Image 1 (spheres, rainbow, N blue to C red):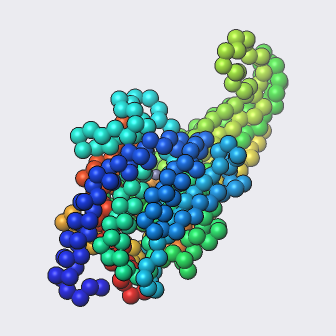
Image 2 (image 1 turned 90 degrees about the vertical axis):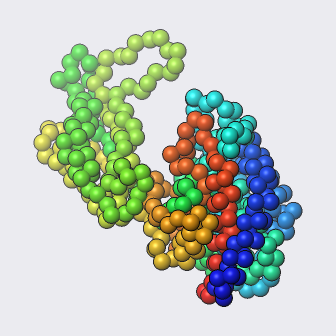
Image 3 (image 1 turned 60 degrees about the vertical axis):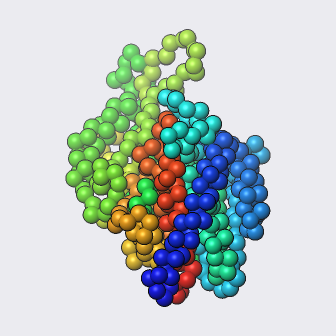
Length: 436
Ligand SMILES: [Zn+2]
């Protein structure tokens, strides 16, 4: 670390000045990113945004790689899964600090008063789909890196910035694929900051676990006028749902965690019923006929269970099996299948990790407040960096208000972007000069 307090203050002042001088550039960059509609699904304009980022960072001396995650879910000639990685080598040996942002945005939905892809600026805020989640964070990290390089051109190590596909649909054509290719291996990258919108004074250490399962109940088809000749799979599923209401939901609600998940309502185990279907398929829109009279012979429920660090993935599954077995012991002819759709254990970076203390220090210096440690209720790409990349020094830190993500009139505050860019630049400085 730097020898004296004055030296550290001098570096902070220089970085602040470099970033303040780039305020208009930061705004324009964010607006440009928002005007490229990268809706996912289906995954539109990934190539355009990657080329845009490649041109910008290539012109500033970064080495650019455009990488298509061929064959990953959703990848096609029409909707190719493109990713960009930009790397700037320093003048000597040292660690690599990487900023990873997803380039995709979710659908706009109804209720907008601004053009979701117009990049409109009003009252110190930039509006648009993806403004906070997370093109504002991407732009802030680019400005942080560019300002840092301008201030300290002789920096050691390396700085990387990536724009990656598909985070909103699991990250399989983005960070997961890049991690499989070795781009997030600890030999190549040592520290990662994901500028997701967690508010500029908070450090997100990780997220809860996820377990998705599909339950099918089986029955026997018969004429609907003589249901006693059949066996209704929907009634069997109704019994499953009844048991969930009676025993599982209250149990989950009572299971609390010490982890600082935000919002606070997520400091417990939760389960969402993602979908429930039984009997005849929904008719096509515009079909005017009537249904035929049949007893449903199958029903299907998809559950989305979010679990705490205090729980174990196999216990989460076992709890569902126990519930189904209980229903079976109480009902005649109850037959079911349970299929695991996907499972991601919780990911939590240690509070003592270098990237955590570097960002903590930045928050204290820039915002003059104590940083707050949080965990996310839902997952994000940190899971792939941790589990596939085996890279543990990773957090989410970025501007924007988490609650605005995926909402109409999503925005990011310009001052918040500037402040968090200074925090990011200070974190670069700290991590690049830290003894490894
Ligand atoms: Zn996001």
